[in-house]
Length: 256
View 1 (cartoon, helix red, strand yellow):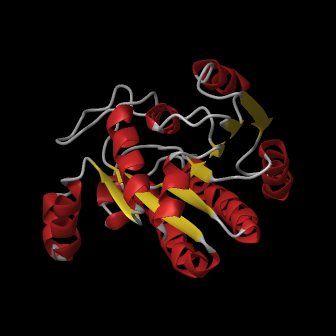
View 2 (cartoon, rainbow, N blue to C red):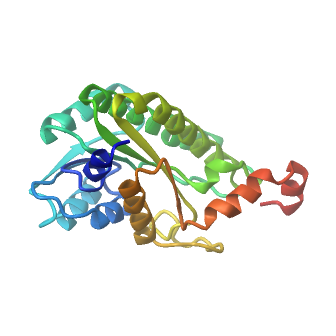
């Protein structure tokens, strides 16, 4: 990716946020360098969360567009993305920030709900990622930030469904990044650890937990250097490398 392309991503004028009510996405927007004439399109299901996010952008963007979106209504995804593209004129940066945590524990009691986690985090997010990639590929430029998770790197018995759902999205994002690079489009996968948000409220915090701002700062630094993968906090990269290389028998005994 050229240096010019990197600057365009970090100082993006047209920004599309899929999951516009996401606290992490909001933190990324807060940390982006100021850009005269910036416009933001917020796509999401909860109108109250979108409205609150739009209010926080007052003074940081000359226009903020809110567009309703349902992650599991696959047939509506193209129209929603095209509507955002029309509103923005051009899209320099896409942030894919939709996902649900689902039931915790070694085996889900509510299997239909577990299946919905897989649908939202993998199929829904994947469909919207593909539709965004279609638009940026047609433009011949742009960057897509995909919020994945360290959970994507190794399946764990303690949260197998969530790990699997994020692994699917993570793999799709990496493959698309390779496919889109010749077309001037960069895909950057962001893998946070445990982040203190509304979604994780009340859960026990493991070591190396962080807040949304930590992820926002790491993401913007990644955009500035044209990175393909970002970890937040950065030292999680080495911990997850060790976990990925650990024998399966050891992982079972540790019951992680």
